[in-house]
Image (cartoon, rainbow, N blue to C red; front, side, top):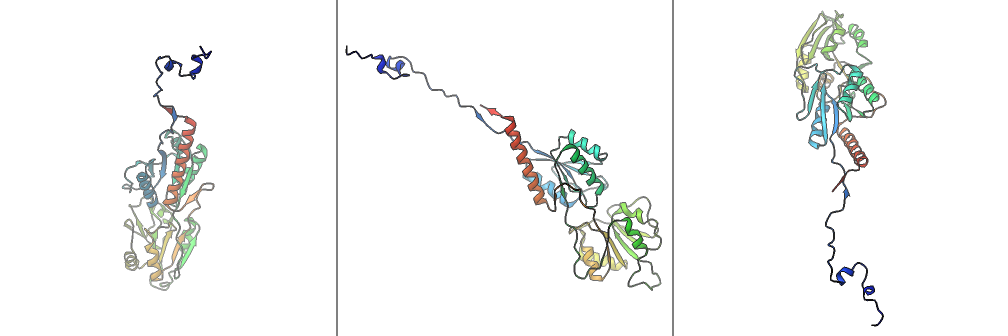
Length: 314
């Protein structure tokens, strides 16, 4: 005996092995790790009716990660709708009805891509978004800009247009046997009632669908839908001996050819200014920044959801 304790010479944890006892096997159970919750598609209400709205719907569908509901007012019987997204047609019942729709459908974001002159719908969207706290983005294509050689007379609104047309004297035919102006109206069928009380001018109106209600007494309607080209617009202006073109500042390339044709023929254009977009909300002019805005919103939403859920999987 040297006074050394054999047991004390064995490092702790190895006593069983030194004594010939069994050794505990290391655990093969994986450690618990936190994983982010799977991304949930961003529910988007897209107020459409324009080419930009359709292109945005297609871009979001192709990108993935978005659940798009495409909404139309229902004024056209055969609207152009994008594939691969839900489509709803009809009004909401004002701002309160739209707010209820946002809540019941759990909408995460609204994009107002309606026509630049759909002021009532835009106002409803802004009011509903403010009431519910749902983010709203306004998508408006740029307005038209006068080019050298254009003869534009701008008016602030459609009601101010009627007096100007009624007093308009054709610069080339003011002393002709028929001094009444021949007016090409491209403001839309819903606005024709504004001119119903004008008996002096002769109107040519181009509409997607036949107008109803009160109409000007001297009116011819042609049914057509763009896009239009310069050659066709020039031929139309000549065929009907048009003296003045009346249009809204809708912007875009689909119906801009009439402005080029009017410039080439030396015709004056009465341009109705567009209403301003709703105040207090971001405005973009193309689908690229709109897609970026929605993608950033989806990323932030999913990051916040993952952080708050604390999802843990084995």
